[in-house]
Length: 132
Image (cartoon, rainbow, N blue to C red):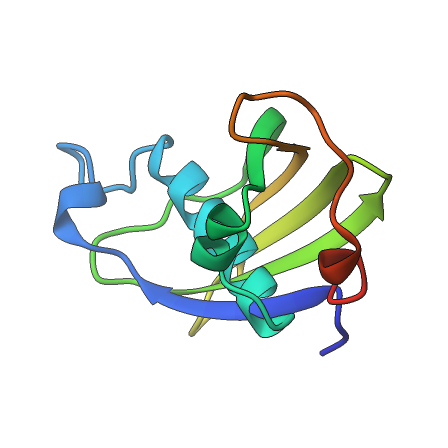
């Protein structure tokens, strides 16, 4: 694993599934947020600490391509990686796999921007730039 990527293992909960037993498409966004948060944590800082320092990240763009469904109790592996970074934004790529079969379930991309407490776009702080 390099500094700009991380793997996260998770299990599908019943509450995330629709009436057919598949993970509802909206829950994938939660998985992606979990991946971004873990990537940040493994870089040496928690999102809570960022908020304490007055920095926040907001999603400005997200897209997903669903390949196969995940089902209740499936164990999944999510690869989250930084694909690009500018002074104020970070682009992430995601690949979600079924842990046992290694089949690709979903690919996605997002862009987040750094803002202050008032929602004004600000530069990603230097202490964070070095960690990611």
